Image (cartoon, rainbow, N blue to C red; front, top):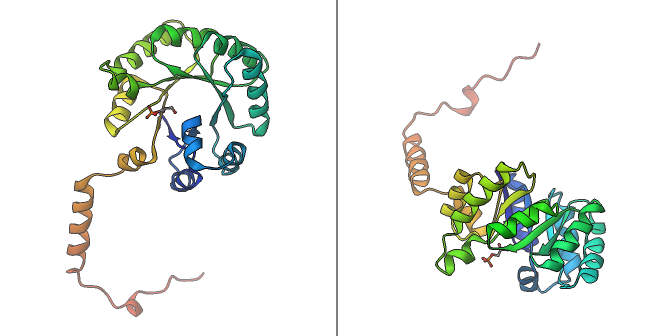
Length: 226
Ligand code: G3P
């Protein structure tokens, strides 16, 4: 399963990229707005880190504007996936962008039928927003299970990018159900590595290590040279 950060913070992305667990980044207009910086500067900086997949969203709502913005974004860097909303115009734009070799992440997906259409027009990623479904009393993970079944039934190669993840259990469930990618906020990714028993265990090992007799440094023989 690929792990993406859902953020436009270059600092957060750099920190996870340096650890080596990051496969990609998704951004959206709300996340970019939080940074208070020029959209293209942020996207370029993220791509320049070497992140292999960076989703950048169009804000036009009609086909010509979506196409113009999508083509422009795709030219910024080869890592770009153009994020297009799931609307009739978005479906048409996706089909055209795809025919031009531009990869699309179809976003704001809330039903299996919407995801079926996204796959049919050739989206590379489909982004079901599971947290927002949970928020309104629907089971977001049920949608991931349906999508996995539908895409496998017809051998669609669209990847299921589980979005709107709110906590580590969402990541775990998405992985068990066969989601291809999970995109999450920095805080959630940080928690994936944490467990209180790891911290306690390490503290105990280090404390016990203090009781182990240590050879004086000078007594350690230098490696032989041949
Ligand atoms: O990037 C889209 C998605 O992940 C948004 O998440 O938490 O605003 O529902 P959220």
